[in-house]
Length: 440
Image (cartoon, rainbow, N blue to C red; front, top):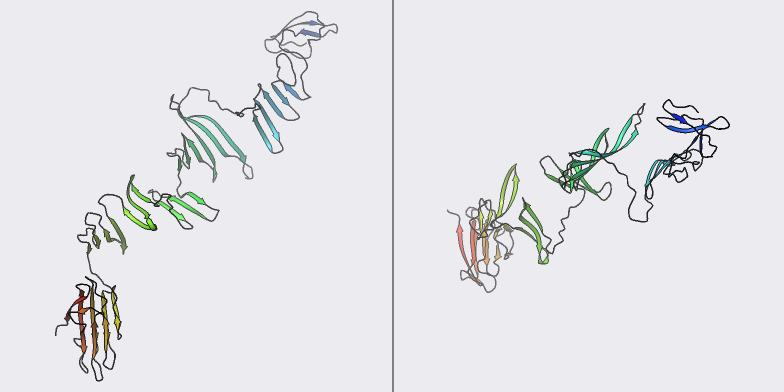
């Protein structure tokens, strides 16, 4: 038997089966006792060495000695034919590394009848410090270049961000390739989830320079949520946007820095309510004219409850700042019965030959006012054109049932043929009227 230069042989003659036969070299600082056998071969007594016997399993095995014996249940077995390495430190830990029909395979299994699972652990076995990376998994592959280059297409990294005893924090980062750059896609950080950010500050924190969130029914029917650099929110929907509050009144509140100032909701009968919920504050309707912001209508919710048009500080029940155009209904060459909703009626008599047309006031209701204006063209044949105003049955006008508010004599001039009469109901049966004529 060849001897290593640091090996020693000390022999005795022994023909027992448990021997070491020449054919190898002792390594390191090994000491082996032995002697020449009858065939002039060196043999050694292995009874003091751990383990003996024949390796178990089929050809192509590499085994680790288990409890003094080589057998098929050894805790470290390489099988050449299957290209598998089994490491068995006792149930339930079994690792199988090799390949199958679908490619590379790593399997960690737990065979215990319990709720636990197989485990794979990365351990950073060093002095703890903040932002210490604990483990990383890379997903690599080649591109289709002429000389394919190895690319990192995905990565998962776990980091201990705070190692202080009692306040430990950590994060996990998931990265993918985006235009040939490995880019952070998802971060789980101290209980928060970040998409597009490595430092999420809320349970779900999404960042991006353009469209940050898309909710869709399918690929073509969706609503986008976009926040710009000034923190403005744009909800861009391909359909209708509904605000459906689940409370009894369907309330939707508007807030500023956590304090509510406005409400849209409903009341009995599903009437819509637009209200101000802040004490002594108003509702202001604003518009834009030629680039200038204007506030044409203000509802003052002070003690007076005034409404302002053209003013933000109404001082009367209705305070109008500016000109007022009232509704005018024009009646041309025909009798007409006024309605209770009329305010200003303009009557024109331009028929020929001379004829009278009549306007009839509605039933008198205390406080109702009607302005009647008239214009008459003179007749060109015998007879005058005329406008009369009558009261409703049972009512009077200045103690009369009918008054003439305008006439144009036959053959006369059209000048001074415009009159105005103001009628006001002073009680439920009486109209009072005053006539105004053009100055001659």
